[in-house]
Every structure is written in C-alpha cells, then in structure tokens.
Image 1 (cartoon, rainbow, N blue to C red):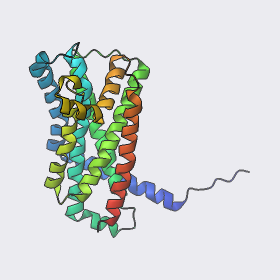
Image 2 (image 1 turned 180 degrees about the vertical axis):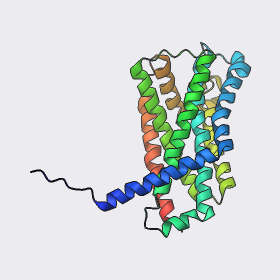
Image 3 (image 1 turned 60 degrees about the vertical axis):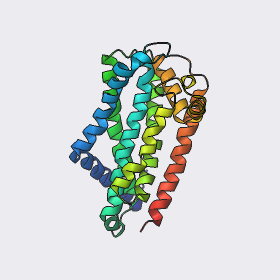
Image 4 (image 1 turned 90 degrees about the vertical axis):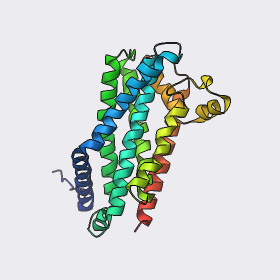
Length: 260
C-alpha cells in the first residue's frame, strides 16, 4: 500500500501567500488603466513614428520596419519596467510593506507579484507591437523554432529588466524618483543597434553601442525573427540577460531585507 506524503504546510502557505500577492498586483494593473494604456500604446506610437517619419532617412540595407521592430520590442520592455519601478516605490513608501512585514507571510512575495504583473503587461504590449508591425509590413521569416527562441529571449530580457526596476523602486525615495531613475533604462536602446546601425554613429557613440548589452540582444532577436544568421551574438545576449537577472535579483532581495 502506497502512502502519500502531504506537502509541508510551510511550503503550501508560501505558495498561497505568493499567489495572493501576484493576484493583488495583477488587479492593481487593471485598476491603473491610464498607466497600462500608456505603457501599451506608446511603443506602438514610437513604432509608427520611426517607420513613417525617420525610416525613409535611415539606410539599413533593407526595409526599415524589419530592422526597427526588434528594437521597439525591447523598448517596450523598458516602458513596462518603468511602471514596475513606480509601483514598487509606491508600496515601499505607502506603508503597505510595513503591514506585510507584520503579518505571518513572506513579505518578499510582493516583489514576485510585481515581477509577474510586469511580465503579463509586457506580454500584452509585445503582442500588440507585433500585430501592428505585421499590419504595416513587418516580414518575419522565422521558423517555429526561431519564434520560440525569440519569445524565450524576450521573456528573459523582460525578466532581467524587471528585477532591475524592482531594485530601483526599493531604493527610490518615492514614485516620482523611481520614474526618473528608469530614464536611464529607457535611454539604453537608443545608443545601440536597435534603431540604426552602430557603424553609422560617430566613433564615440559607435563604441558605446558596440558594448551596450542591448546590442547583442537586438542583433540576436533580429536574426531570429528575420531568419538570418546572427553569428555568436546569442551567447553575449543570453549571458548579459542571465547576468543582469541574477545580480538584480540578489540586489533587490538584499535591499528589501535591509529596508525597514
């Protein structure tokens, strides 16, 4: 006769608490429709702006829409992470974290809630960007396997950037400060291969773009989506994303424990 061993109660409680905190953050996103709409619509507006206003003046050796879509997708993650930083800062300065610490729950679960909500928001934004891109001429030649690789890379990038935003939200003095700090994140794609070839930039900016972690991620994503070889850029892309994720996750957890 086989005896089934029940899961440790503590593990069940932790899972239940984390699920409840994830649900809280998702519901909060639905209530902040103006913020969510801005994070979703702004990348689409930028896509149309780059394609129809700047695209005719930028030479990439092909249709500019095919070149710029991967960059817009990564920029979308930046706007999503900015929202996360503001939400975390609001929790840290609004007193709710103190209430969580006084309850018999795992307070760091609230950070997981913010991360999951960010991933969900970014998923919606990314799908919308791809839908609009296809309507205006984006010609993805990726195979099913390449699409899976692209989706995996985007998810890894969003995860890494979200934990950076969480760390910023923890140390920021308030939501406004968190919004200001995330400007650096939003600026990174502009000095990379996301929108123009780095070799078209002045030498100083070309060097910055070459060593910008956004560049290998963009190049890999572009290669996957267009079905063209991307060289060994995927190694740098995955290494950067994993490295940023691990460091940001540890830093965020350490900062959260020290913040009282």
